[in-house]
Amino acid sequence: MSKTKHLEGNHEPAADTAAADGPNPVLQEGIDYYFENGLMVFTDAFLGRRGYCCEQGCRHCPYGYSESKKHSSDVR
View 1 (cartoon, rainbow, N blue to C red):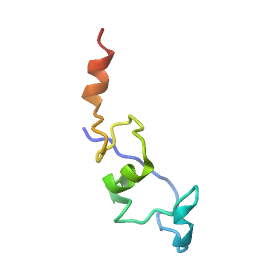
View 2: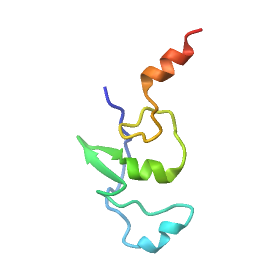
View 3: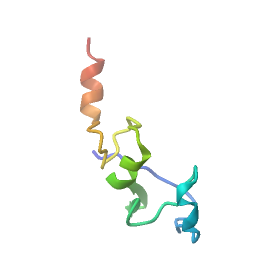
View 4: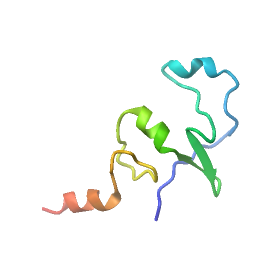
């Protein structure tokens, strides 16, 4: 089962893209994320730019993380 990220509220990207270089970059639909069945799914482009793995099993994780790796490392 794929994991997706959900963001509630306004799903429209902000009009001001100049803030993309700041600490809270503006996300662009279709480039950084898309919606599937009402859930926000981050793209590998966004996740790669973020610079780290959150270990939540993101569908497009560019760091190779998967839930199965998490569970196999828990077994000792």
